[in-house]
Length: 365
Image (cartoon, rainbow, N blue to C red; front, side, top):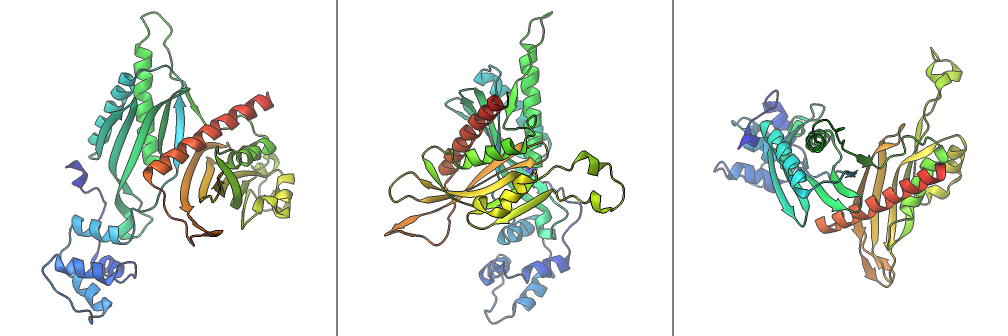
């Protein structure tokens, strides 16, 4: 039960509790549940501010805070995914051994981890406490879950995880364990074998045109789907060395390094064309694609390189689907995808991205 150990630096104040209960994000039914859990019935006629003030006077604990945090949606944000290919030849047993070492490391932090295997795929389901003291009291310390998957691929094993600092730490521990396992396979006196890890990156190709080409080919390259439209494009321009060396706020030292364009058809706009001419390249994009079928559903995607200057740390997300109703009509809103659909599109994007990287590298060579 290590996850229940509190690791916050302070407790929530009565005022913070009063403030959060006055937010419209918490419904009156949820307020009623809080009181009912203490054996108290409340009237529909009682003003919210009175209910909040009275509840904040009660003693409250970790479980109360977690329940209230769940009401204000602190755990609902879906994170982008990121992936790497482990190209070194490995056995599933070696993957499991490294996973068990990561599990031990996670549990040493008083977090929870479960390992499961099926058809050569190793999964780690992790529950951990995430802290962000820049947020309001009830969003500073929240329980998050993460699925880390290692599955066989044509190139070796593919490691997929949510894109955030915590799972990056887990990945580092896992890969370090694998590195040690691979090195230990070498006989005494032989050169130690090293772990070969490949990621989706154009760090060594800094041509703006080729970096933009990656995204243009990606949004047009999902097998079985046809580009419908681009809704958001974010472009980046690294700061030139001359400006980096400038001191003071002279006119020649001014440099705009990023811009965003929103709206349908942004890749066809004159604005983005002019940015291309000035050396900008796309670093993040949101787009929609239709199934290559009669009466297709519309899917929404997002992809980016978080390290914009080096064009690395690639992440992606299948955001949702707008269902086709018939007679040329669609549902009004996009809805979330199932876990199986998310995994399907993750593999589709990964496959397309790796192929495009290889193509661009050959073109540059």
